[in-house]
Image (cartoon, rainbow, N blue to C red; front, side):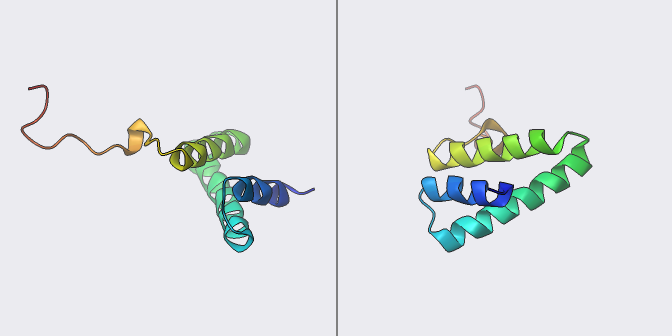
Length: 77
């Protein structure tokens, strides 16, 4: 089984229809390659980070790096 097939199955297990799961898997692999080159990390580390973000997003958790900053004037009261 290829990496793309495994990621497609993973995305399907999270609830994506087959066509969408295939597109998501391909994008995850493409972005992992980009991030590995941009950030100087291994492809595996980049893919792990992206998969972790997908899992967090699917469970409704917003990772800290994507959380909106508090409204102006409401910081630390």
